[in-house]
Image (cartoon, rainbow, N blue to C red):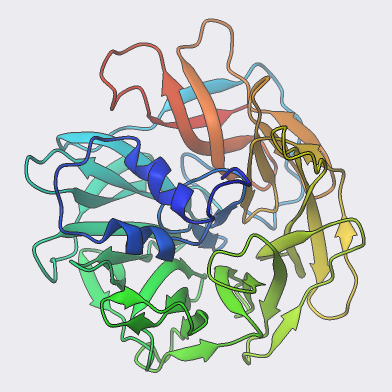
Length: 419
């Protein structure tokens, strides 16, 4: 989201911009304020992504989207061998007003998102799971008259996680696999959840807020909550000196995220929580203002740093970001080259997705290598912002645009870029 936006509010606005909403009793303002994510599998900073964050974890062998490379396959070439292709992901067989892609496992075999369903009297959202590119729709039985099922992440075993929003904006975390749902219990004192992520062994993590009557508390700091795979009925609370936002969980149980001074703070510090729950602030080198951790890759924590380079309030802000790697312990930081763009998303593979006004989306690897996610000549499809990038940078999935149809829903497809 842009720096002048309230963080999190833009995420809901971007999601809702894809469809004209019918009247609803959902407390949108509350849902907006709780939508602090984005990248699971993905963290959006200078532009909005979705109401609930995305994340990913696992190393399943890819079939379809991922092209067969797993995170441990270092022999695969990292260079494009021909012109890229951009294709639209198959839409589910349901009357909908638009799709939003939210997450994937690292192989790209499993993808999740949401479908904005046509309705005259209320806003309905269905979960969508793509397996090898084939979509299926699912929906959690509603707790009240609203039907808002946000699928946000999936692992290599096909375990989907997400949340559903009730009449007053509260969300209940759940897991879904092979047609079976499981609601996860709330941690004592916290009943507003967003940004659900899952790792390969099935540990689930989310950002949790407290309620003050029928509103989100503005005085009780948010926390992280972990539901261990071997004890999902015993949620554990992760705290830090400030307001916690979770952005992912590594396969070893390390939780990633950032901490701010208050709920809407634009200044925030990257944090990590050990598998035992110990909080640790990650190093922010001089010259950088803020950042977040996103994932654990190859024994290191990956994320990004950010800074505003102009202080003239009469001109639009210029924001720079850079990929960064931190050790699992210690106080160092390895910062890659800075890039400028209007949207920055960190994916779990460590790549940054940078949406620019003057050209195609740019993908930036942790080591600074850049790749333009451009379209071949004559293509009717364009990648607007990538929310998942493969380990080798040769495949990306994200929200796109199409010039081939007057239908607004068809004009905002989920697209797959390959080279």
